[in-house]
Image 1 (cartoon, each protein chain N blue to C red):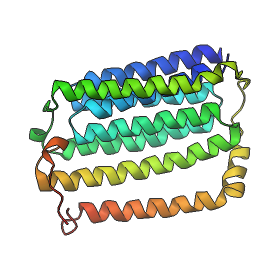
Image 2: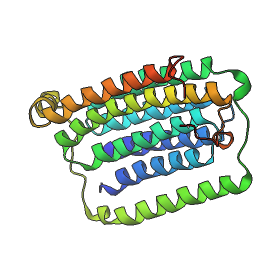
Image 3: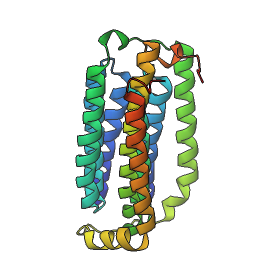
Image 4: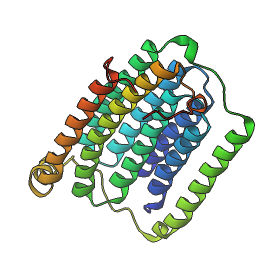
Length: 96
Length: 164
């Protein structure tokens, strides 16, 4: 087996998650697809990189994904309590 | 054997992500995301990364998914499940994703000549620990700052005074 099917699997997952991110209309679901995109990048890293080094970086990326989900959901909660909506199209103002 | 497992789990993850795009119900979408994440854990097992598979199940499928389900539970139901985007923007989004996929596959065509030589083996957790606490100790310690900052940000954003 060549390394191409592994890369293709990771890229297909990334593209599907990107498609979901660009087409869905809810902030929570956008964050879910963002996590899936990071997950696909992680797969590519583990599959194509040198064994120990890529796995070490993948462990670090897990922690970054967890931090990202926490901050993202906190942002969504704060935004939704101000704007009373979860649709990104209805959030148009920026307040300093 | 490894190739079959890669195709199986990769296909399952792709199918779950595809179904998630067309799923209207948020909680069902979260369950499909869980299926995609568990399939990814299978993919890690096929790639002889047993520790990563365990971490994937504990962190992604456990902690992060719980966070998403809790967020879906506490957000008022009136704000959910409203199809908002128009057909044009959806087609545009799908086209952009197709372009991304085509470019990525085109760039990675060079990998067709690179053989995948890794055999199924034990995880090498000791090597991984040596790398994390030796060669990458600085990066690993920096991660604690990232997590600390994210905790502070999450608390500040969700407390009453710190609202946007």
